[in-house]
Each structure stands twice: as structure tokens, then as C-alpha cells.
Image 1 (cartoon, one colour):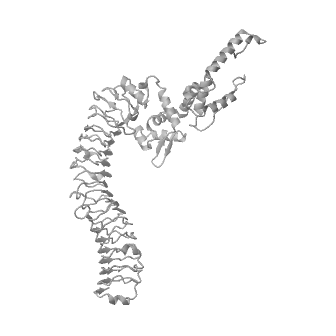
Image 2 (cartoon, rainbow, N blue to C red):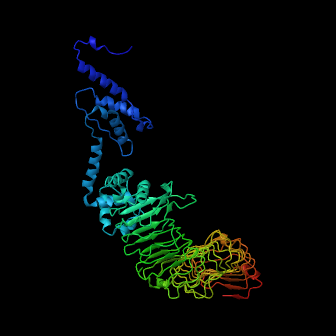
Amino acid sequence: MAGEDFSQLVSFCFSDMIERIASDVLSKLVRVRPSHDFSDFVGLEAHLEAMSSMLCLGSEEARMVGILGPSGTGNTTIARALFTQLSSQFHHRAFVAYKKTIRDNYGMKLGRDQDVFLYIACLFNGHKVNYIKNLLGESANIGLNILADKSLICITPPHRTVQMQNLLQRLGKEIVRAESIYNPGKRRFLVDAKDIADVFADNTGTENVLGIFLNTSDINEPISIGRKSFKGMRNLQFLKIYKEWLQETSEDILCLPRGLVYLPRKLRLLYWDEYPLKYIPSNFRTDCLVKLTMENSKLEKMWDGIQKLRLDGSRKLKEISNLPNAINLEKLNLSGCASLVTLPSSIQNLHKLRNLSMGECTVLQTLPNDVNLGSFIYLNLKSACIENISGITDLDWCGCPMRCMPSNFHAEYLVELTMRYSKLEKLWEGIQLLKNLVYMDLSGCENLKEIPDLSEATKLQRLELNDRNLNELKVLRMSGCTRLEFLPSYVNLASLNYLNLTGCARLRSFPRISSNISRLLLGGTSIVEDEDCYLNLNKLKKLNMKCTRLEVLPHDVNLESLCHLNLSGCSMLRSFPQISTRISLLSLDHTSIEEVPFWIKKFTELVEVT
């Protein structure tokens, strides 16, 4: 039998024998391997063996070993596993005290800016600077800059997004958790789904709570919220209940069986995906509310008093009550509110409202009569059927169901017009003053038969007609579009027979858009020799060039139907080829052609030469 005979030792002592036996048993209980908490870490034992050999615990010398390496590479894991393995051999243990020192050192380093640090760590990591400033106030900008200077956060372009390193974020959450380990309702911020569920279940929220961010995707079982659950959290400023990813559920993950009678008046952010009730508590004061988002909610009625209001996807919302106090409202998103019947008349008093989205509000047919859309920068009416619109600068009406814009529509302020995939046959009746129009997108408008006269659109830079064939379009007038540089490529205007590009000074070429053009007016453009653009114009009857940069007309092209050719003003043109024998009118004024070619006698139908 293996063992040790103490009686054979020269200096035998009974107490020594007991101590050696105890040490032997203890060493067997904590073998040279990590605890079960670290059993899944591959390669950890090799690190522990190397560390143990360096420490030389059998020696009477004091030893200290440092573990160096970038954050996130396992340094803390190795230290914790070694501590677990060896701590039983020591009377005093220092690992917990060391963590506390790190936390305290960060507190000393941050000073007054610790609050901003914790806001970022717990609530706003990954958000834009402007978003954070709107919610925390302008003074937060100073704190953000200080945190960036200390490399505790970075602000990334192009949208100035705040990013905090994962370990620092965990540290911030741990600082908040330490405020009340066993009673989460006494902490400043609640972000853990289990802690939040406990606070709601036990109704233990206190006035200490400033922010609640609940990701419902982390919840496996429904949470019941009492009608007075927020009563004790009177200082709550930021409430965000959101779903990180879509999941199919047969019931609401958050249940309010008795409704909700109270929301804190200090709320600055109210973000609640799939809000399960029909109404907001009637006594909710919105004095402090800055941002409201309630996507895909079951709301049927709303109220006033905010700057940004997002209710998109609230398909059951029927009414927005008057907003007399919402004087600072800048953005209103009602897209997808398929049951919305009308807007409140008080919208005419929202002088700061610049962005209004009403896409897919299929029931809504009119706006209040006195509303001034001239103050809007952006109006989205996707698939809606609104009749009284006028005076806006940016109109996005994709899928417009009308055949023609309303008769009272005025486009003099329009800068951008987007009508993709609409049912329009023509945009409007008569001529519109389009002096501010820069961009027009009519892609996918299959029924479009006529593009309006764009001769007044002197600032037009881009016209989009792509994605589908505009087979019905016959006339395209774009004279005077001095900033237009190109026409869209790869679009088939099979029926187009009239194209007027006179005065488009920046236009150098145009694509093959139709083989049926009979009248082509290019006077005052910058088109130079481009044989390809004429090859498919067999039906062209009238060609008006007047292009000061044109030096040569293309050779070997067949314009067999051409009867009227106007080259007056083509000051660099010295000759022209025999392109058609059916020409009856020929204008060569102010060209550099010195003599009429001999073959002109073949022009048997020629009536006039100037």
C-alpha cells in the first residue's frame, strides 16, 4: 500500500504529521485543473500550468506575475481560473478587492462625467450624438467630448455615432448593478430582462429609476404589468420597450390586463413597440416628452405635446386628437396607419412641422383645409389618396393611385418629386411653374402617357424614368432645362414621337430611347458628334440642331424620312453628309459651311435653303 511511514522520520512530530496529511488531502481536492466553471475553455490548463511554475508557491519568497495582452483576449479569465484553483491555500483573497479598485479608479477618472458614461453604457450606446443631446440636453455634449478625449467612447463618422467598447459597457452596467444588488428597483437603470420582470411582478420600482430599456426578444414568458406599476417610478425619464428581432407569438409578451392609469410626467423618451392598449393614460402630461415611438401599436386615439411623433405601423389608429400645445413638433410619421380617417385641424398651427409621412394611409383622403404645406420640407404620401396638397418642397408619393394630380395642386415650390410606380397617366393639367425643381423620378409609371412641359424647370438636374417601359409616352418637352446633363439610359419610350431638348446647355448626348421619333429639337445643347444616337431614327422628319459645338454630322446614317433639317447656329460645322434625299427645308445660317455640296441637286423635294 502506497503511503508514508512517519515513524521512520528522524525528527518525528505529531503536529507536523497532521499538517502534512491535511495539506495532502487539500491538494487532492483542488487538483491542478480549473474549476467546473472553466471546464469548457480550450487551452486553459496550459496557461495555468505555466503560471503555477512561475509562482513557485512552495518557496518562501514573495512572487508577483503579470498577465499582459489586449482587452478581450482572456486575461481576466486566466486570472479568475488561477484564483479559483489556488485561493484555498491563502488566508486572504484579493481578487474581489482588485475588481472594486478598477471600478473606483474609473469613478475617480470620470468625476462629474460618470453620469454621462453610465447613460451611454446602459442606454445609448450605438446612438447618434444629436439623438443623445436631444434626450439628455445640450450639456451632454460636453460630457461626450470629455469621454471621447479619455478614449472611453469614440464618435464615428459620417453620422457621429457614439460607440463604447464592450468591456467598458459591462463595467458601466456593473457599477449600476452594485447600487442595489438584491433590489433592482432601487437602481438608476434597468436593462436586464429578468430584473425588469421582477420589478414589474413585485411592483418594487422606486424613484431611483431613471431609465428602463427592455428587449422583449429576451423574454420567454409573458410579463404582467400592473395598472399602477409606474406609480412608484415618478422620476422615470427614458422608457424603451422594443423587439430586437421579429418573432411569432400567439399572445402579447407584455400583458396589461387592467390597463394603465399612470405614466411618469418626467418621461423624455417613450418608445413602446406593439403597445397593447387602445389609449394612453388620459392624465399623462407630455411637458417633458421629446421623442415618442409606438410602432405597430393598438392605439386608436392620441394626444398632444411632443417634438417627434412616430406611430407608423399602428394600423388600428383612427384618430389623433387636437395638438394645440405641440408647438415644437417637427416630425410626424403616420405611415401604415391604415385606419386613420382624418388629421386634427390644429395641425395648421404646427409651424415647426417639417416632415410629414402618411404613406399607406389608405382611408385618409383629405387634409384640413387651412393646413399650410408650404412650410414642409418632406411629405410622404406613398399609396395614399390625398386630394388637397400644395406648396411643398419634397413630395414622395410612390404608388399614387390617381390618374392625374389634383386640379388644385401647385408645384412652384417643388425641389424633389418622386412618383415611382404610380398609376398616373399624366402628372397634371396645363403648365406648372417648376422653377425650383431639381429632381424628378417617374420610374415604373407604366400608365404614363405624357410628361408635362418642363421648359420652366431651369434647375432640373436629374430625370429618372428607369425600371419599366413607358410605352404610352408620346411627347417629352424639356426645353430650357439648363442644368440637365443626361437623359436616363436603358428606358424604352417606344411611342415617343416628339422630343424637345432645346436650351439644355449641359446635355452632351442622349440615349436610344425610341425609334419612332419624328421631331427632335436639340438647339442650344452641347451635343457633339455621336453617330449612335441617330442610327435608329428612321422615322425622324424634323431635326433641329443649333449646337454650337457640333463639328461633324455622322456619316453613313439613314435618316430616310427626314424632311426638315435646321443646322443654323452650328458655328463649327464645316460640312454635312448626304443623309436624306427627301429634305424640303434646309437651314445652314451661321455655320462654317463654305459651299453647297454638288449632290444637293438630288434633293428633288427641296423648297428652301437659308
